[in-house]
Amino acid sequence: MLMISIQRKRTERLKRSGIAQIDKMDGFQFEHYLGHLFRSQGYKAEVTRAAGDFGADLILSKDKKRIVVQAKRYSKNVGLKAVQEVQSARAHYRANGAWVVTNSSFTAQAYELAKSNNVRLISRDELVEMLLQMKEKMMTSKKTNSNAKTSS
Image (tube, rainbow, N blue to C red; front, side, top):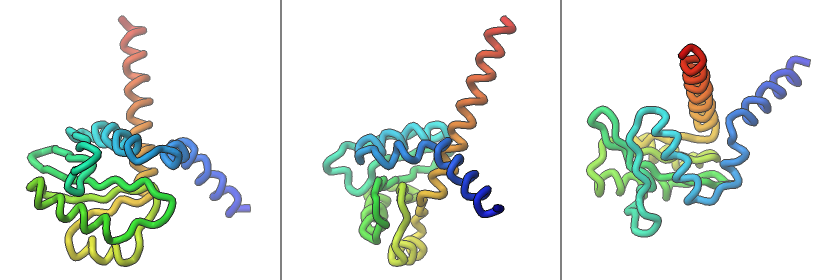
């Protein structure tokens, strides 16, 4: 009974997060959606051009930090090529940080290479948490705005 309850709660969280819509996006849509997600976290987010991006799909800036992001909307696990690409992009764009974000997970090789190169890997579970936080901020903002309008 407890397992069923836990599974129901997990399924509800996934529905609320919107991850199912992300799973249906193409790569271009995913990159732009991530730009929106990171802006909600206070980053300045720039989506790079589709071709010739030198391994970075987004460039984030915040608090004098520059982070390159490789976005991988996949149905399978992301391998070490994505880590290699974002590591090269970090040097090219003179960034302080390098992240790979996916709606899936990563291979053991990707985790190993990321660890030795100080690349942050954001997999499906962490992405879901970020999406839920963004939606919570949006709901709080809407409530605050509608309360301000009613009290005016």
